[in-house]
Image 1 (tube, one colour):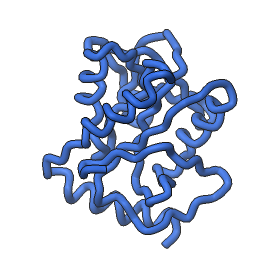
Image 2: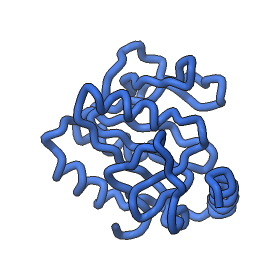
Image 3: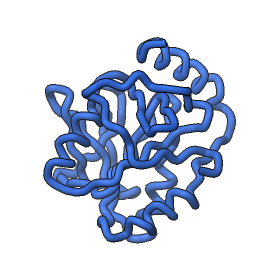
Length: 179
C-alpha cells in the first residue's frame, strides 16, 4: 500500500474505534521524560483533531509537573511554530478548524509530542500528508537537540511505512499498550 491508501485505511479504523475509551500509556511517557530530563522542560503538544489521541489531559498533567506547554500555530507555506499555552488560556480556531494558542510568545520545544495516522516498528510515521511536522523537526534539529515522541493507538501500527527522504523518523512511539 502507498501512503495515501494507508492513511485512508487507518483513519477509517480510527474513526470507528473513536468511541472506545483508550488512554495512552502515561507511565511510559513519564519514564521517557525522566530518562531525558537533561534535555529541558518545554513540551510541544498539539490539539487533537480527527480522532487523534487526546493529548490535552496529558499536557495538563505535565503542566502540573512544571513542564512549559506549547501548541503549534500554522503559518504560510506549510510551516508552523510553537507558542506558549496553559490549560487556562483561550484558543482560537485556524483555517483547518484546529484550535491554536492566542499567545504571541514563541518557544522552541525540547520535547515534541507528535500526532500521527500510522507508524511502524522503526518509528517511521505517516501524518496527514502536509509535511508540517517533518519540516518543523528538520528545522529545529539544526539548532538544538529535541526528542520526538509519537502518540498513537496500537491499532495504528502497520508492518512498514514507505518512508522517503522527506520523512523524519521519531525517537519514540507511545501507545495505549505497554511499550
